[in-house]
View 1 (cartoon, rainbow, N blue to C red):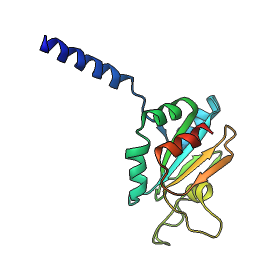
View 2 (view 1 turned 45 degrees about the vertical axis):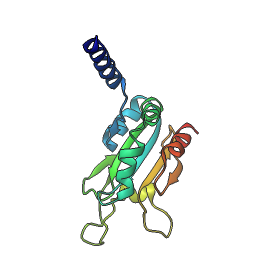
View 3 (view 1 turned 135 degrees about the vertical axis):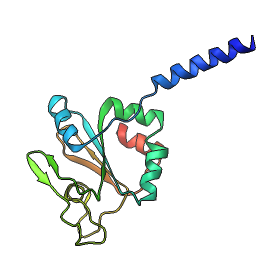
Length: 155
């Protein structure tokens, strides 16, 4: 009987983990293709490898089942390293990191465009919410707790 209960619990946990949704992080190129096929809201998480709160959001916030489900259902999610040196093609334009070698923290053009603030240095983590027409609705420049992020996503 003990083995039967163990097998039953194992099967249930395997089934439950198979049903778990995860965030499908897109690149900007993948986002452009997805938006042309099916417009949806967009959430962009700008991060840097050295940013402790960025990593905390990735481990603590974006792994919550209700947040994963909301992003999977109603949003395209993009995760972008602000110090990337990649050339990004998006919306018929080319975006580069022009700051490499010029500044101690070399932010990419696309990060500065979407998450930049007037007269202020870009702060991380930065989360940008866009509507279906790719118009910025809201930008948040700090760690966002799971309950707050869920409310922002459902707003």
